[in-house]
Amino acid sequence: MKYDDMEVKISIRIFKGEKAFGPGIAELLENIDRDGSLHKAAKSMNIAYSKAWKILKESEKALGFELVLGKRGGVSGGGSLLSDEGREILLKYREFEKRVKYETEKIFNDIF
Image 1 (cartoon, one colour):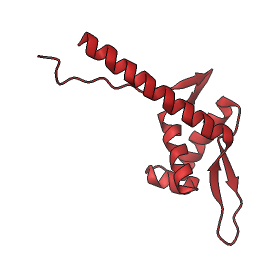
Image 2 (cartoon, helix red, strand yellow):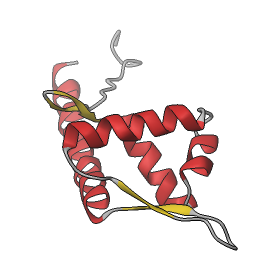
Image 3 (cartoon, helix red, strand yellow):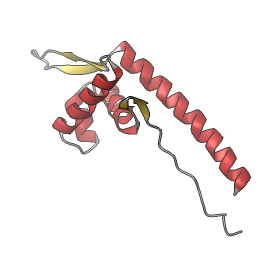
Image 4 (spheres, one colour):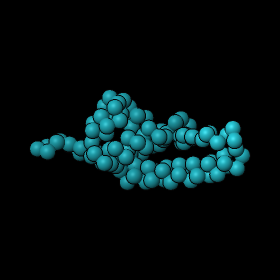
């Protein structure tokens, strides 16, 4: 059939007046959680630290709460970890994204 090789792809963005949360900040938070560092997270995404910082701060401003908490440097250096709110919105976003993609694929397959 002529539609057999087609697929649907969607990208979820959440707005609170302005763009507040989406795939970029979600990936950044997952990398911060894994690496314990904004710098390492940015590096693993192949983006500049300054861009990662800007993405983070714009999302925090739009949402009205901190997503990441910083630890001051010392002998072992500083680091970053997700705030409770940051972890919560990340988990909710991924669950919402999963459900929307599932339903979207069902609808797409019904139609095509």
